[in-house]
Length: 303
Length: 276
Image (cartoon, rainbow over all chains, first blue to last red):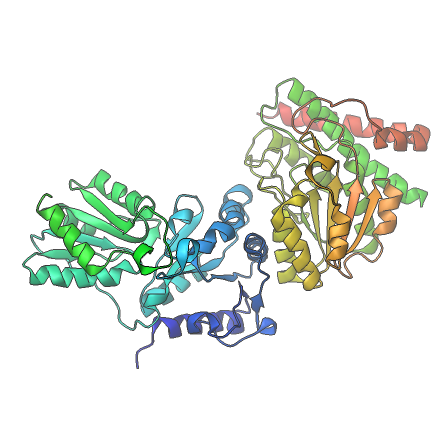
């Protein structure tokens, strides 16, 4: 039976603690649920470290552990909490190699979810890290992508921000790019928007549009591959970067990078620029398949 | 005990003379970025450095931004420190650290990045991962940072072999402690079940309080007097000077040590400035 993303993460954490003798820090790790079933049932003596409810300091503890070369994993259960957990990581761990030639590798499991969790906790916040130097950002949504992210981290000595999403945890399938001759439009989705962008692509195809989809795993460093550039240039109406973060962050930055070297417009679609409330009427969710379909058609039809 | 006091004075003398010469270099505009002079506070690091030699440990050291004396007292290379002040690749932080972000890998001194007080949680995390003796230096102002306080609490919870040194000069730039808070660090730390003391920077007093360091978390709030401005080369007025007091205690021997270190520092600057 194929492994889910959840099982893949759990096994990676187990190997990291039991075989690599490292540590995994976070709040409420050993509580019921074990962070959505992504942690093995291990305790402090095994390296599973419960920290206090002191988000800013906790980021500092992990940096200290990183300086000692143990390659800690840091679980931040809601990406919105990065506003409190990030300061010492982005200001120390991400700069330590450059200033002092002292690497501080940390594997940050930053977990997104949304829907009725209000103004702080929800959605992805990888743009927070993206604008600062010294980190690498990957958003794996499949088992193989997650394993790849971990393997890259273990070969490297940088801070890795792993932009996870809880909705991907049940996924067992790998996701493939679709690039067609004479396409109308190209979608470049990030994180959880990849699933709904694929649904949108199928709907648009049924309606007679030719749509490319190019999945974005690496957010930083972002490499605009020649094949992607050609796909964009060959798309009659350009493309669109989709994100689970606010549009004014990684999505806009990546779209800008693409437009500088391509000759087509690249639009963006992400969270609305407003605060999320708890009730469905006031929530702020990533683009749905219908919303993506409508936006693409509106661009194609020049409206 | 006099031998120990003399050893401390020798280290403090190197620190003081380094800072006096650096003061001159700033006034002469040879150095054009902000410097954080530690003159007046040098007996803290000097005493601790002598004590850890006595007890035979080699701790990880997490330094604060006002750290030239810490660097030198624990054996950091003076030539690399001068080069750092000159922004050279051969500096102790490869010319990136300036005055506030110095380090010594050889002496296990970790650099500070300028986010006030973050060396406290970073030092605690390093100590938790290594379980080895660790010293964290922090100013009385940076110690107020919320993450500094919660880090001290977690070190207590985990019973880490860590020594927190609060270099309490009573000033945050020029804002006095009484304006900023109505509590004391040693009281807070005691409340977190960390063995804590509020003491002067008299080297013999510091030395006495370092018995049994690293058996459990300990915090020393050490009252001291910053001789110069928060940043740059200037004075805020005349104050008691521990260095002058100690030099007087040692009489002619003290003067000789002072003269020796003055020349050592001058020669070191001359040598480094002479390099292209």
